[in-house]
Image (tube, rainbow, N blue to C red):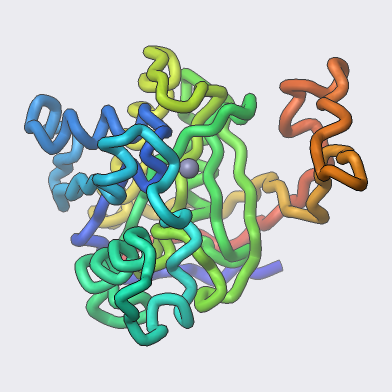
Length: 271
Ligand SMILES: [Zn+2]
């Protein structure tokens, strides 16, 4: 059992992004509101002010997931560092722009933290998506949300990939996570999902502020989900068309599988 104290410097450059997928509208709405300044104080804390960012403006304008390629699959190190070509899809060009703005990925110049906002049609509650089983900072955030969030259950999926292979926008910061909230149909907004996402962002920023101001977060353990395998729908072997649906007894029963317990590990504080 690892009980050492984890400490790191305070975080000052914090970004909250939305519209990485242009048809996931709760994140888009929040970021647009912050950019207009209507509720900008939501991003202000005593130790930092988070910057709002609309990550895929063209897809957001058209209310589609992406225009030419999935932006949130363009942030592997080798994808970002491949030589640019005139035939590169819009999203790859935009990924490089974002990497020079917020990264470069893996560098000392990268922003301290990126929270990327997503919605899903799945009955997912509020779910943090992480890439490391030993990212104690983000796992402490998970514990903070799980013990305080009022409007939705909080889950976590950990993919456990090396940083260079992690493909999503939040991986170009020194630290980051996706906050995925659902169920929400594509290109629609629901007030309850918007409130859940707002509360999630508020608590994440509150946590960072407490951390920056020297709070010692005590040892804790959390339950997370890990990907064991991918399971496609049954398909017609000739045409590839779907030949089945999710069984009614399984439909919407997300997060009913086996979990992995992480921790307890030592306390966390800023240095
Ligand atoms: Zn998304």
